[in-house]
Amino acid sequence: MVEQSDRAPLLDWEEIPPPDQNQVAQPPREADAPLATGRIPAAITLSPTPNLTAVAASRGETPNRAGEAVPGSDRPDPLGSDVLFSGLTVKDQWEEKDQIVAVFVVTFDTRSGNMVEWCLPHDINLDGVEFKSMASGSHRITSDFIYFRKAAYFGLACFANMPVESELERGARMKSVGILSPSYTLLYRYMHFLENQVRHQLQCPGQYSPLEAFYEDKKAVLPPTGNGLVTACPTWSVTAINRCMHPEMKITHPAGCMSQFIQFFGEQIMVLWKFALLRKRLLIFSPPPVGVVCYRVYCCCCLANVSIPGIGVSVPELRPFFYVNIADISALETEMSYVACTTEKIFEDKKDLYDVYVDNQNVKTHRSHLQPLLKLNAADKEKYRKLGEQRQLLLYSQEVEEDCTSNEEDLFILFFMELNNRIFQTLSEVAGSADPTLTVDHVRAMGLDPQGDRSFLADLLEVYGIDVTLVVDNLCCP
Image 1 (cartoon, rainbow, N blue to C red):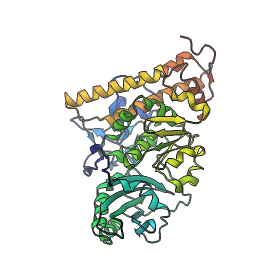
Image 2: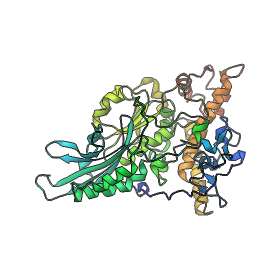
Image 3: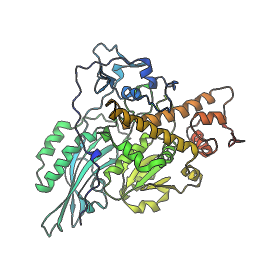
Image 4: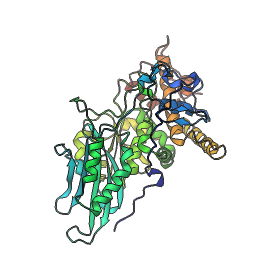
């Protein structure tokens, strides 16, 4: 029996109108762009009033006269004189282009299983894509969408399952239509197209002309790099702040997935935040549909955002693998840090592949030294309470004051980035002081629990190579 997908309305795709070419970037006031300086201004706190202007600024948006963010206002000015950030001119702004390197159709054959039915270009290596774009267990649902990684590329595929009166197909026709790109942040643009095309392929198998036209229009011309490396997001620096904050929540447009993510996990979000900041290997299990879970992968990566230049340069990048199956085991074995999701329960037994395993809202780890991080402390609960307060204030301003310039995604992203910035700014200042000793007062100033977060801080100092002495005596005392 085919079950309906549980895709929420908030995940429906909606096309963004093209930016106004005539918009000229206006230099924000100094207070509106605190993230470029590498320090934490006094105005950026975990107060009930978040500095959401900083989010718009870091995404290359400037407020118009009505206070609304203007997409595309980061386009280079012909004179090259406007400054959006301290030390960052409009010439430094970055805009991603369409870069589709492949388009393909995957089908399920009752005799051969999953197989690539058609693709462009014809000579591209798509080994394994037939399993990545049609998740294990998909035969039980009617539709789904899947983000995944394939070597140096990211992919998005839309799956559909249609009942047919055919003994050869055993009463069901299943296909996926997908694309590959060097980056995942713009794949959302093609969600509707892929959904329409997979329905077209189910109803009219073998008619590929719309896909051929799409590929000719969007195909990428890529420079030869030869290293096969995938960079999910540039290392934080002054020039990277505008490029990749979340990045621009493009994968989740329209807004909604980050708020759903935090509501789903509740206070456990603080546990995931610590593991993400420590660059652990996180594996999320869920039965199909897997599209919503791919968004959870992305949101976990967003929890570790830091906008202070130089922080995290020497640590493994927390990269989203999105959906993985048993064909990805060899790739995961070499990864130092990642977040991924799977529909295959067999992964739970392969403990050498992950540090943290998430099953529904249950977060667990088999690493004994990480066990203390699973327990919420008073500081964790207080941070979650403040997050809830900020959300309620935002919802109030949207409903009563009709303020549509900010959204929950910006709020949540900024909340955790400010939290991370505060921690690393304090650690950096202590490390550079005459007495590089982290005291109880320092720990509390970072919003952490002197006793409950002791092991977390010790791991953080080791992972990031920060030369600070952690006071161990009387750490639990008031």
